[in-house]
Image (tube, rainbow, N blue to C red; front, side):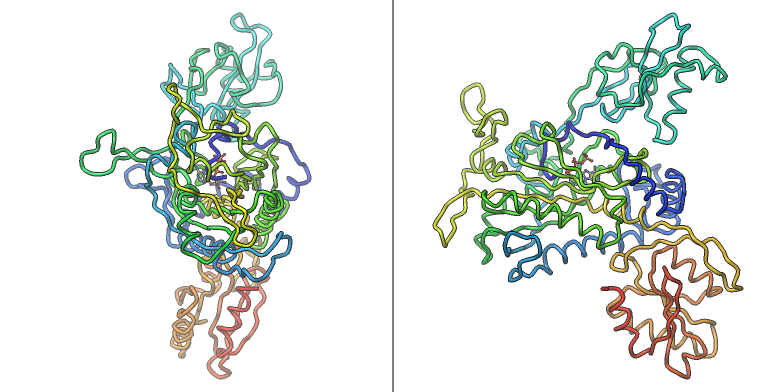
Length: 575
Ligand code: ATP
């Protein structure tokens, strides 16, 4: 959800166990244990070159990730699919199903570093924070809402009767770690575990008011955690050689503001009219206190955002349209409905200016059972952004909102003073458009598709014996390699013909050539890479000018004419 400074303090763990959803998820994953599945995915990502830890040879840098040869293709395919489906492929003359009317879509690529005033008017400067707690004993820093724990007591305890024992352990180790720490604190042995008395299930530290009876995640004594303090998540940098305080700037924490400040430029330079959307894909940076869960929470990541400008009267309809359309999009690319959740924010969770916000969430395997992680936020932002950049940062406590003033009665953060209103040529009405913002993360998206794609099943090897195989069932549009070309054996002219086919296909498809080792093993490697089709040149190919196409998911092999191969592959990929 782009700006959403007001939302940052509401990072909640998505509770609400949905047993059916969970059963569906487990079933899809072939009854793999959730965490074991995640470990396997992480290991495959490294082994096959999807993802590497940034700066690994120097020990790594927390919260930063590099995409390897397969990963870069996957993420690029995801961004391309988004761009094509949302922006470049949009036909402004056709009213899509569910849309209140026809509309225009255009793109933008704005800079990462922008005028610092932008972040003051957007609210990020004052409000884009997380709460964190420091441990006086371990000197470690934690995000307030990410520390989890349980209330525990022991009948024989002489000191504090009931304490809150915390941990930063992953979901599957959480209870074991809490028990271990509680036993240690109460000076008990493992065999006494039964005598510990728990009060309620595990919960986050932000539900606890009394810090003196909290056992910090890495502390031995009680009450070592400080009260939560605010921490601004924007990375600061300086412009130019002198680098004085007046030269500071920020790396953008979202791409959205680049769109708002270009609203007038885009409008004046394109023949578009409200309603229309501006799409942008690009890097964003947030100095997250505790980056975790693989790429899910990174400090450098990519966003795919749309700011959709519409008339205030139809904004609720547009909000619903975008919310539903974005949920459907994830499904068309292969995420199952059972592992997705559309979560409408409750009124108290909404930012001050927001009329409605929904998160599209995914059942990532690293989350506790029944919990979901945000993939994308769709927010109805009213006229907050355009007005803030015109008039100055608005005061969230006022209704209707007016510019926030300082002690001298002047605007706290001055706006651009530019007119960002819109005049409807037909009706003559002038108004400040309302904004609907579907804001997705490319890295979280890529991770969700990787998690969904991971399967283990059985396939026959070259001797017909069933073997366990790891297969990444990525949608063909997302698959890094669309097809692999193999000569069955490295002789009798098969490599030559296979190389000819490879060269021909390579002109407009990401294809891979492999002639090393047994063909079964070559199939297996492509299954792991998520390649949907393997093309094999065999003895028959030389005489009949045909090849076989093996389907990764069904294992079905069909024979097609070499002349028709490219068209057949394209048909399969786009269907
Ligand atoms: P969260 O509550 O998980 O921090 P958010 O609500 O702050 O997310 P938004 O400001 O709505 O996130 O950003 C839009 C999208 O950008 C998110 O839905 C997510 O896909 C992506 N995103 C945000 N922060 C990160 C991050 N630290 N790492 C990777 N992707 C992110």
